[in-house]
Image 1: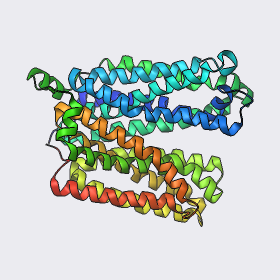
Image 2: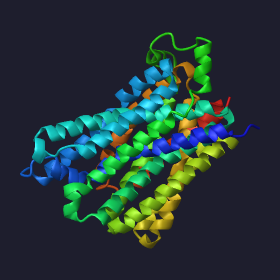
Image 3: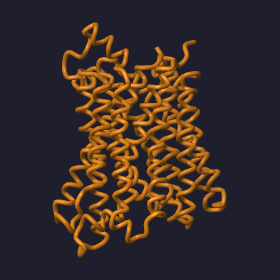
Image 4: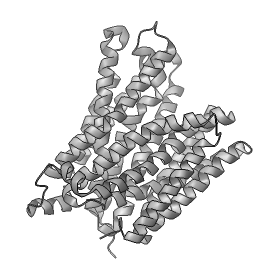
Length: 422
């Protein structure tokens, strides 16, 4: 069996590092939403309205993901994976740096929130191209037998960006007083993110175009029509499959990683510091789980691993939420266990990438993933919040439902042989 080469390791490390920094740039906004709300809207505006508009600007980044992903994927299938891989991180770094240097409402009035919205839309477009583009890039670089671990390492890098954002936000709040944070401290994480992103752009120049794309180029096998048109006409089954897997992925990340720290404070009166510390531990375990499940998918097949991992994800989600009411002292251990099994999401990209032929692979994955994530990722918090008054275990039940979907998808992949190496 082939092993990862030195060049493969370099590709994976640089790709994962860039992905982590880009995801940091995308999510750091939410950690400073309260400060941004005070600085970018009129002082006489009610707090709830300023907060609502600030989160609306944050959400605009998610809404821009499908359009940005589709456009960059189009050129990625026609002009090359590497060019779009470098463009996506550049389009993320520059707006992040600009946010850190942006004048506030007190200086330029209504232009401050409008410019912030524009920069956030640019960030959303960039992340829409980065995530599917990175999965395609690393999958096409390594031997087919290592597609799972390649996607696992990259996904670990992306989730590591969430942890990095949490740690930086915690450090900034500890270093600066509330007055210093308002005056200048809030700018630091954005400026750092922009500068590190530009460093990643420079590092990515050492990466090479994927062998799969070079071969298609040499044989003149690139798409002869708009790639997305081919995807919609000839690969609808793969689109539906990828969207279903993305639904599982979004439920696991949004509910168990992003919403849970707030939910346990509200439902079980767990202190914020305890909840956030446990979340950091869970996110670290998630990164480790991504690599483990990716490697297992290479060894046993995506279908079998997705079935087993999804079943354990549902079980640990139920265990976590049911035990928080009676044994909150075990939050670190239970959340770490949940985080590890959320790592089953790493099986999704390797299976999804191989569901589309190389000529339209970037477009097929980007369209399916970004549209599904925009829909399901946006609706999940609303749906879970609406169910909470009727069902205190609604978050766990929602994840359990999607885990069942994951088991069914895994069964389908196992029976059909889809998602396995060539």
